[in-house]
Structures are given as C-alpha cells and as structure tokens.
Image 1 (tube, rainbow, N blue to C red):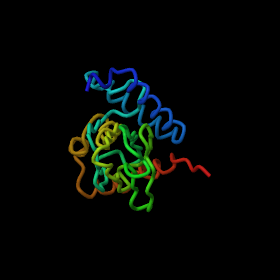
Image 2 (cartoon, rainbow, N blue to C red):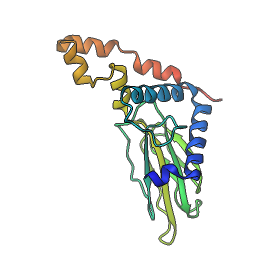
Image 3 (spheres, one colour):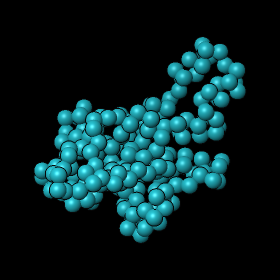
Length: 192
C-alpha cells in the first residue's frame, strides 16, 4: 500500500477527491478533517493514507474486474461521504456503472471518474465489465467508530458509559438527547 500512497499520481487523485468533497460539502469535509487530526494528536502512530485528504482509510480493489454487489457500508461515518474513483480500461457505456438503489439511479462511471456518496446510507453497487476489460477502484472513506471515539474524549462508547457509571435509563436519555444526527443534516448543502 505504501507504493500506492507514495505515488505522485495517486497523491494527485487523493487531492482531487478531497477538493471535490470540500467544494460540495465544506462543513462535513472540515468535520472529518478535524476529527482525523484529533485522532492523530491523541495517537501520533496513526497515519492517514494521504496528508491532503480528510479520509483516514483507503481501499484499492485491484480487479482485474472489480465488482461490488449491492451493499451499504453501515460501519462508515453516516454523515460522511465516501470517495470512489473507477480505474481501468473498459467501455463505460456497456459496464462499470454505479448503481444507487434507493435513488433508482444508474450512473455512467468511466475510468478516472470520481463520485462522492454517503456510502453508509445508500445501497450501492457497480455493474460488471466485459470479460476482456479491466476495472479497478480507488476508495477513500471513514469509519463511524473514529468519530464516536473522538466525540467521547478518546473513549469507545462502552468505556464512555462505564466511566460515567450511567444506568441504562441515563444512557438511553443521553443518546436520545444527542443532536449529532441533526447537526450532521444541517451540514449538508443543497445545490439547486
């Protein structure tokens, strides 16, 4: 992975994805960047794949014909966006499309195309490419547990509640009073 994260072209791609994310969702981009920086401050051993990126995690699917079946990345940060770039040599009119199931969208995704989606909220997949073609993917994302841990003062939920010796009813009341979801929705921008 160090070969990929150290390569000039992948650094450029990661920066492009980050800038696209910042353009369309600056508040969530900032929240993700600040949270990742806080995690690194708490544990200097933690490393992001790319310094210029707000995403703390990277997956590269090497193919040769990468296909993702319909799924939701339910462990990812729900308010966050996942950056996905299709790579390879394939005819985007015949295959490689991104499918967003709940939205009823089938999106052309040619090689080099980047899309940002809330992968923890939307069922997504991609269409296979021809047998003689190649399709890879380069995906940046953030686990939801990182945001909970930082919000809890660098403690897991279990540690957080045990540390406060909260009863079940107190824990339930605390969770119900949380405005995290509302705050996240407020950070979304509407483009008309």
